Length: 184
Image (cartoon, rainbow, N blue to C red; front, side, top):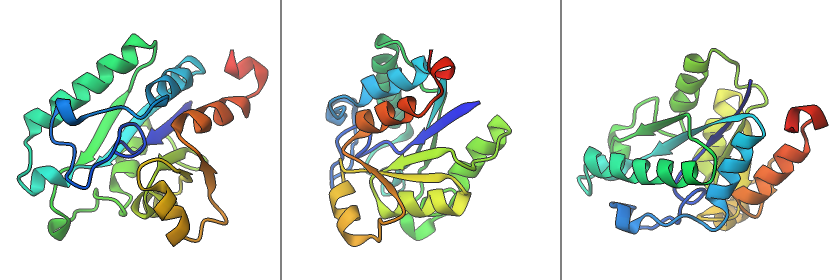
C-alpha cells in the first residue's frame, strides 16, 4: 500500500497566526489540492495529521473544524482525489497528549488503523513539530517551504530532510520515483 500523510495548515491551506477558524478563512495553497488528486490517481492513500489547538483555546468548535474538513474534502473530490482520513489533536498545547505533534501519536494511530509500518511513509509538513513527529514515528520527514517552511528550514538542521517548494512539487517528485507500472 502506498500511503502519504500530510499536515494541513501551511501545507494544504494557507496558515494564519490567528488560526483557521472557519470555512471562510480556509484558503488552499495554489496547487495543493491538485497535488492530493495526483497522489490519489497514482495509487496513494492520503491521510492528514493536524494539530488543531484552536479548539482547546476556545477559538472555534468541532462543528467549524468539521465544516472546514468537509469543504477541503469536496474540493479534492472535484479534482479527482480523496482524503482517506483526517486525524487531529484538539487540545491546548499546555494539555498536550501523545497525539499532539511533535509527539507521534496521530501518525501511529493512522499506521495502526491501516495495519502498516510507517517506515518510508512520507509525512509532509512545514514545521519542526511535523519533522519531529515523523522521525519519532519512523516515517520519512518531508519539509515544504510553504506556511512556516522557510522559517523551519532556516531554524532546523535540514541536511537529512527532503525539501520541496510546495506540496505539488513533492507530489510530482514522489510520483516520479514510482516504477512506471505503479504510477499508471
